[in-house]
Length: 239
Ligand code: C5P
Image (cartoon, rainbow, N blue to C red):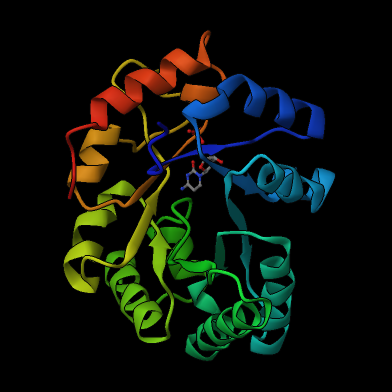
């Protein structure tokens, strides 16, 4: 049985490449991330295909616009059948509240399970210098904390976070809050371009609820064996 805490990133550009991976991984993976690369390449069919295969979909499009536009866009993505979606918390409290309300309302109209919404706090590619340059007033970690707190208050279900932020957000926002962390490298994998990464077991121990893992699975010589090893690494870890 697949471990629902592992979300495999489908960073490919065609339906054929996506279907190849999903077929190859079979029952070993139940949850997939469709990000901007795949969505802008093939469109909604990426989500429709995954749903037709009975998979959960993390549609990571990181919406950032005025409240009404984000709300209406999330309604459309809810109708597509995404299970998890992302917005930028820097869109502000009203935008996050509008997003949460729109998704809940659309799901109720369709009589489907409400998709969960995650907020990006500050992109991990932003360092202190870049943060000051775009007008940041206090340091990044204080800002991340403030944004994660505001996200919860606005009705958002979780954050996409660096594994290094998981412990603090978990302590602050409680046990039901979702914390989805990329930047994961199983003990057997190479780092690729990830600079600050941690193992699946460590991220879960620190409070992550889900792990986004791409290349260690998708570019492994034997992807199914890679998933088996990761699943074994985390089997006994529960926050
Ligand atoms: O292949 P890899 O495991 O590095 O893929 C991780 C996924 O998470 C990719 O889709 C990547 O874009 C995304 N991501 C990340 N680091 C962040 C935010 C997102 O690796 N800080």
